[in-house]
Image (cartoon, rainbow, N blue to C red; front, side, top):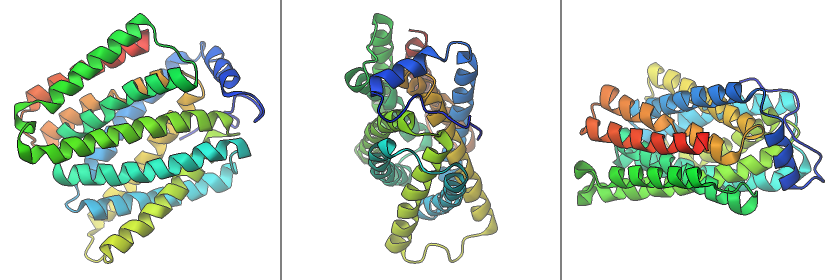
Length: 309
């Protein structure tokens, strides 16, 4: 991942509203590039989630992924330096939220299908981030954005009530996916505000990944006690690749949040639901692929409305 040496939009004494105005006002020339970066990150994000789901043991998978994130995050933090003091309250809040996200996502994948869990969890985020940004960052919703929100909500409802997901045994992954989506919305908003206070996107991302992934590596090892014995070489490779993709994709999103509106970035990012639905059908042979892909496309139609609004 690459980013400009200084991604902040102002000194720590500036208000969040002022920084948002500077960020939004300075992106017109390169908006298409930023959109393309976020869309590429969305595809890669679905890819690392597929890698995590392909591993037989989800606890081992998430331990390996987060171990790779610790290494990447440490290197980024050392190279770029620490974020400004004003960014740390947001960063520490996000660390807690990211740990909760990983735990919820891990358990979602233990009990549910990728093409069921991923679109529901990710599709909720634009709704929450757009609403949250309107409340705390004064990014107000227009009529077309409200229509986009309604379309996304309709797609999510269809995901929940698909025949093969409505059975009693499927309630757990649905609830876990919904919880994951709520946490995604919360950390996206916290990080979007925090990175605008930071002196550098790379430094902020490095500190975030090092801190959150260190907690998860220690926590998962304590929970399982014997995480590593018997992990094949292919497992290490998949974990390292997924971890590197995780760092790169979210780093790109943080970079984009300094240049576009938070709700738009979140909406663009969640186009990954289509890729996840297709990956689940093709690589994991998950049932009712047609209905899930259609539902994911409905969610993306709502996302498109948010983007063009």
